[in-house]
Amino acid sequence: MNDTIKKQLDHRSIREFKNEPLPKETVDLLIEVARRTATSSALQASSIIIITDPHLKQKISEISKQEYISRIPLFLIFIVDQYRNNQIAVEQGVITEAASGMDGFFRSFTDAVLMAQNVVTAAESMNLGTLYIGSILNDTTTLSKLLNLPPLTFPVLGLAIGIPNQSPALKPRMSMELRTFENQYVRYENYLTKIEDYDEHLQTYYDLRDTNRRVDSFSTMVFKRMQNPNLRRSEILNVVATQGFDLKVKPKE
Amino acid sequence: MNDTIKKQLDHRSIREFKNEPLPKETVDLLIEVARRTATSSALQASSIIIITDPHLKQKISEISKQEYISRIPLFLIFIVDQYRNNQIAVEQGVITEAASGMDGFFRSFTDAVLMAQNVVTAAESMNLGTLYIGSILNDTTTLSKLLNLPPLTFPVLGLAIGIPNQSPALKPRMSMELRTFENQYVRYENYLTKIEDYDEHLQTYYDLRDTNRRVDSFSTMVFKRMQNPNLRRSEILNVVATQGFDLKVKPKE
Image (tube, rainbow over all chains, first blue to last red; front, side, top):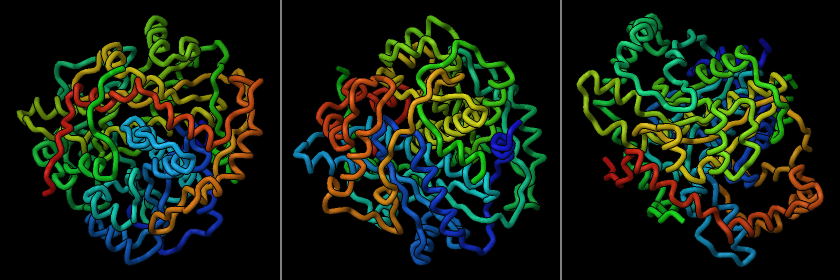
């Protein structure tokens, strides 16, 4: 097994970093990796916002309800960006609805996530720690204002990078037998039976966030999540519309 | 620069593969990389469908209008999968709307794309070639039927992997100065001026798909795209709804 894959299999979320900024060359290299990431139809319709302002970090930390955000050495936010290409079209006299279509939104969203994971792998190959921060989406209205996002853009994912100051255990994951299918999706009769071993296994994992508490089994975790969804995020599609994307259902051609 | 990053910076799309299947150990290792990829709230709500049936490849090739799909050695489709966790909740007597919310959809979509890019990096680290196939989404209604997708699932991205049988040039990309911002998004007055050099540079790239034709400049490519969007994909949000996700806009809490 090569070093790249060894590191990929060793991935874990790092929530505490050493209080050391990353050298400019490291940041530039990570951004170059983002640049070379695959992109839908070569359109490069995604962007990155680097959060350096302590005041802004604090504000985002309040949205996320994660206090460690204010201490992240390198904090990136990946965004859908159809604004730039739309302007390039407008400057050439083309006014169309293409940039506001949900097809373009999903392409840009995909591009943004591909970049994020490529940057994570690059960072980890340099022994840096990473953490995806989805909770920046708890309030996309406020976040979009804080980042001064123009129409046809949308925040997708936050990413923290730094020198790790903790070494959490590898978190157990369910068997890929449950998550991989050949040619057609297969529905199982009884998932609780299928994940019995995983339920047991997961409870042996002690999360560094609270080492005194046994973690829930997977089925209990899912149970709690489904009973108590994150209502703050239920407005996400509204904000996609507010940002100028067209949610209207369209007839098939 | 380490080998991982060297390979990442050397990424290119491979459309022609040697007619050799990948060893089972290679496929298993790629799936294990997918398993270890970061996942929103540890919920693992994404899945992979491996397309091996030649008849099915042919059908998907027709959707994509890409004849090379029928010749892909390893063909993966990454999907949103809220079905599994919803069943785990239902089996415990919980009936909620959480699994059908768009927040969950976006989390799963993100997870699926993170897995895809991690698999791409792993494959390329083993000198395999890769190609994302977004065109499987040209007809998500038909694709969902072909894959027998249950409610609360949705196809996200196709991925081809194999031993490369071509070596295309590295495709020029625009400067990340245009795609990276500090703290706040910055709108430029004149994008055509900003991408002048890139427009020129891109035209020096000869695409292997048609070596006799100069490629368009970026601004021309965007112009053509915006004037002639892919209408076959305009129904994408309808199919998200058909698959059981709730597009209704929700009041903010």
